[in-house]
Length: 217
Image 1 (cartoon, rainbow, N blue to C red):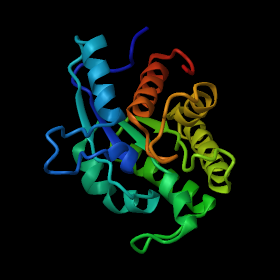
Image 2 (spheres, rainbow, N blue to C red):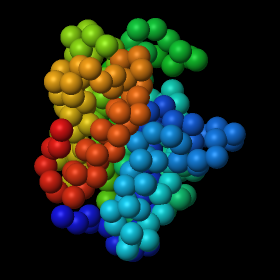
Image 3 (cartoon, rainbow, N blue to C red):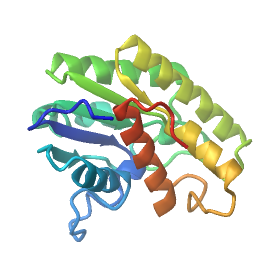
């Protein structure tokens, strides 16, 4: 199996706290954070040492699609990535539980439009390859109203990937399967934020999807 990257490619990861994982903390010595982005970088270096890739992380904890739109020019287009990976949606749904820092719930229709606009602006800005990573989970209770609602947002991401010729990474599907089939492993710390095992799973799904291997466990 091989990856579709060329030497010199720049891969930018965008999203919320699950992507951020401390990358914005000036005291963190790892500019990629401590989550799945950093793990992906390590896997790429170990498995594909011949590829000379630049990996960037501009995730921001707490972001919804609305916040991504506000910082897209500076934090995405200005960096001129050849590949863009977006994982967003948990906070768009989570705010239905209550406002946070003035942020409210983003309805599914608005989420779809925001995501569509982000992708359109990316293609117009010269980014040729887009990867959409599904939002994962919110609660330990997989049958909670918010988790079920998040599933609808995940389906919107899957549909958007088809519509916009992007690569869809089924992180939610793989995480849900792992939670159900291997309950002895703690995959998230609070039902939402992945543990090291959860981040490793997301990284593995991302790599395998780009390799064209289908959906790994």
